Image (cartoon, rainbow over all chains, first blue to last red; front, side, top):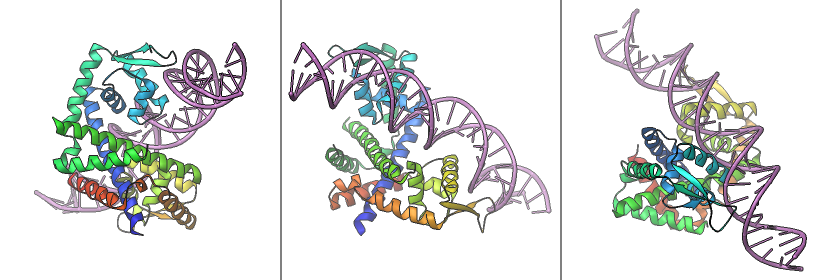
Length: 138
Length: 138
DNA sequence: TTGTAATCATTCGAACTAGAACTATCACAG
DNA sequence: CTGTGATAGTTCTAGTTCGAATGATTACAA
């Protein structure tokens, strides 16, 4: 069946592309003296959110988010405030230094991004397809 | 700049999709009593190749390929033969049991694949775009 | 109200990964 | 031929990840 071949190709290509993006993040992380997960976490912390929301945005387990947050808090880049509406949850808030570092991370991640190898219209088409798939997967 | 927004969206969606595929592989691995890497390695071992080639196909470091091969060899699913043309290299060859397990892995990976959520023409388009990107990245 | 299930964050253990260091072998320019 | 650099595979270490178990809090049905 040809469809199975397409499925396998897509899985493999996604895996390879994800790895390429990982390498890019790793370069940025090295440049900033951080780990890849810390850079990704900073990128996602565009506003005060809970640890669980961060885990969802990073597509990882909550326990891993706790681990990353520990390191970023040790470095003084963020604080965990009690959540105003839910005493179980905590609100992650960047410090002034954390906000600066985040801006730097976002800037570096945008430079020389592997996705830039595609034409603008291809990037747009790719986003459409991935977005559609993401939506259907819930 | 709108293009930067697209770049970020694509990166994020690729990451999310890669994670979704990972979860799928993990389910299959649990079902087979193997680890995710072992399942992926089996899938890539469609013919006798070297450890380095396997690492390239798995998009991981050579040291990691060694690690995975150790486990699969312990389980009697493959053997490392001396390479006929290069005494540095080794040829990875599946055993009869390894061949059976591989067939099972390929079958399970094909069932309920997340990529199946897309229409056939969308899958094809996605493959084209990812393939183009992969090609331009070397 | 009360109890039962679900949710948030954390801790812990086991497994996986990248990267550097090392040995053995190859390629090939001089 | 020779030696200089590149390559294949392995080992080791530090750091990352998942998954299960725990304690605290919330939601909601009886």
